[in-house]
Length: 125
Image (tube, rainbow, N blue to C red):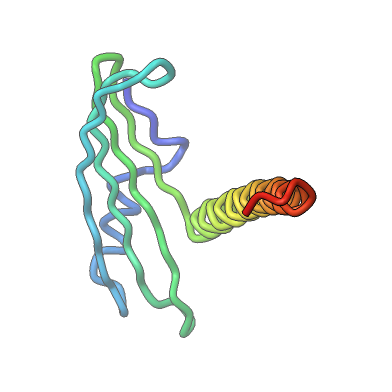
């Protein structure tokens, strides 16, 4: 089973290969699988090229696994959305962590202040 999402994967790949500003990056990622995703091998190929003086990006994703294989092409706008969402998730995670750390430190400071006051009242040092 091959999934190209209505795009001729090979034709698009050949078209962008060697365009002005062409820079490829390729990674092969084996996945052992987990509860939600089956075991598979992913080949991620990101290509940067120039179009009308602007950098454009295109991603070619291939996967091969026990339940079949597929290929998909992701254009610049999709890649920008993925990157933007990743940054948003990271930012939200940092804010949540900072909030928890702040609350923990505030609680510890309040507890320490109570202990100091209690020790001063009882004369313990």
